Amino acid sequence: MECSHCNRFRIRHGTAVLELAVVMIILMYLTLGAVEYGWMFLKQEQIANAARQAARLAATPSATNSSVTSEITTLMSGYGLASSGYTTTMPSNVASVTTGSTLAVGISLSYSKIGITHFTMLPLPSTLSATVTMEKEGP
Image (tube, helix red, strand yellow):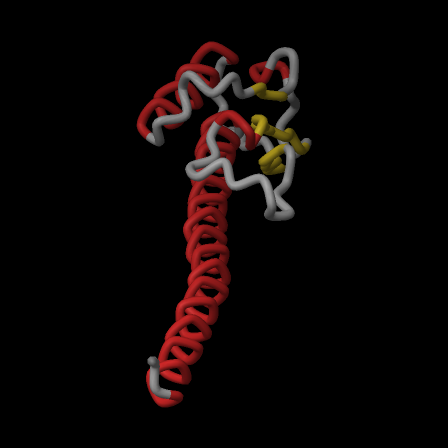
């Protein structure tokens, strides 16, 4: 015959296990969310930096499209984004932009190609992009 005290202990133990399972699921979501959003912000900053550096180069009087493209490729490779299928936008010929005019350099890529956890229950952007506009320098 079981005592009533032992039966209450089993019920409390079962309740504690259930509460732990619910709390662990919530903590898992929070942890994965923090990791994924941290990664997303890091990659967004890296893309913005690559666009800024490329625009800075494009704004110089001696810049060419090939030198700007090479700078973007070098920076994106350094950030581990070379194989992510990014796209760039810039003037068709940065050398022909007149002094004092503005030019824009943009980089964008699909976030699904660079996500770290691929945790699909988070509201994440489909694309990360950055566009930087600078004034063309000249003599």
